[in-house]
Image (cartoon, rainbow, N blue to C red; front, top):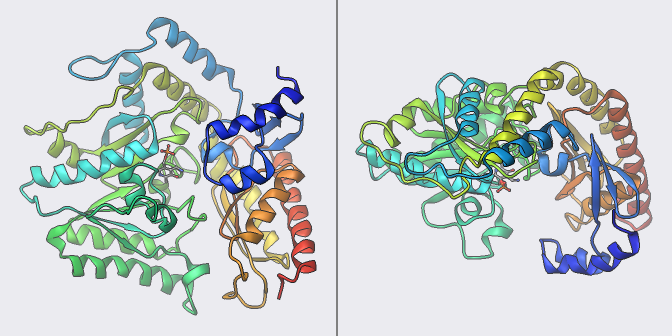
Length: 458
Ligand code: PMP
């Protein structure tokens, strides 16, 4: 639709909507994605690039699904907007709530809608405190979360998140949030085995609760697998121990399913995958496959009883909570996931197929560890394969180099520190998985050559 030259001139216009990574943007200009279909993006120069990140971990069903566009169009014509405040609601919100209750674990049957993962976690922040107020335990206010976690970009989301660089902007976290370490064995496991380290990391939670006082802790929030923190897959011992601690101490468990939900790990939710039983599950992203912005908090019967049952009247609601067009997009998206068996596909077909090939990249001289669960994976780049604990002298620089080379080679990977991350759409075919792994390998070779030449290795 757009001539390339006009787009290049528009390039400067990216500065009109600045984003993070301004330094790179100023040096290199922006990349303009003009269309997409399936797992493939097209940029303003006509290049075809594989979307190895499903947009931002969200496009489960792939790009360009006309069923979703049609459902949204139909809904827009019928009822483009009405609110879900006071006593009004509308069919798409009702139908979607029913569907979510059906898909969620049996003890979870309520949803509070919003427009994003960040808003979902804002809702969580207030809801867990209100719940304990209602239970006659108003001192239970502290929320424990983890360093390196990501829970959004609002005040509550950034505070609950564990990104120190974000905390530094705005004097965060807000009071009442306490961070513990994440179960990142490759980075922080020292000489412990993964299983030993999993228990060690879980017991840090127990220690924190003891220090703060059980009667002051409202909730623990965590992603089943940390996504933006670098695809941190916890050792097998971690979640059972965390769940035991939280149950014993009667502390609410918030599993942030914004990335892990809707099939990413080969089950409907990351909580199903790990067999954990959260009280609250913030959702977004894969709910609509990113076609329209929508989020929510899935709420257990126990918490619902406290906040909206028995005289509870939790003040919740945004202008766009349960937006009809977004709910229609979500319903169409979930129908595709079900009809095409995408969750089962991740568990039994494309997930294991890609994992087998991805893990072989661990043999590359630049790679210290390759890991993957479902369709989310990472490669840890290291300067010296023989020494697992050694890191590059300037952490993050090799990762960004590798990310940019990957894009030039035709594959979107994301860099977190010096880990290369992928999270492709669930519709990825075997041939596309082969392309992904071959391009990742070529990218590792190209990156390795430059790093070696410039004295980064060893
Ligand atoms: N939680 C998690 C686990 C996320 O990964 C994200 C976004 N990357 C969020 C919350 C925030 O979602 P949003 O960007 O839609 O506000």
